Image 1 (spheres, rainbow, N blue to C red):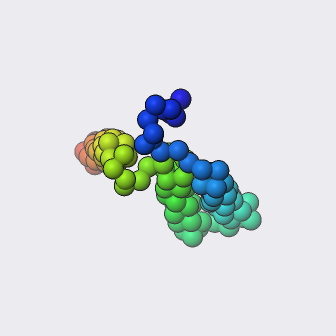
Image 2 (cartoon, helix red, strand yellow):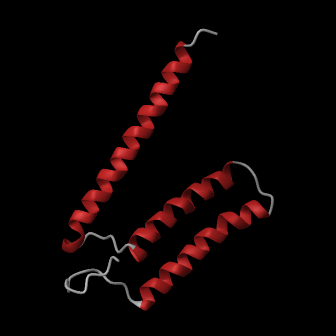
Amino acid sequence: MSHDVNNPGAAHGSFKQYTIGFILSIILTLIPFGMVMAGMTGGLVIATIAITAIAQVLVQLVFFLHLNGSEQQRWDSIAFIYTILTIAILLIGSVWVMTNLHANMMI
């Protein structure tokens, strides 16, 4: 369990904070869902899905994982940034390798 009763500086959310995060998560889920269910297609829907997905991740990090720039969260923030950079390097490297393989294939 993430709550440490022996550490008074550990970040714990209030009921209000969890409620705000939950409501924002519902709204950020319903916006793209409503657009798709309404039959909308095209670049606007894809852009909306991408923007709301990024916003959803930020809401989850701030309201539920309590990740912020405070002194107590410094190592958690560094670990999160390291994880994101590692995933980005793997993803970009894989796309780069696959693109070069595709370009150099004998057709």
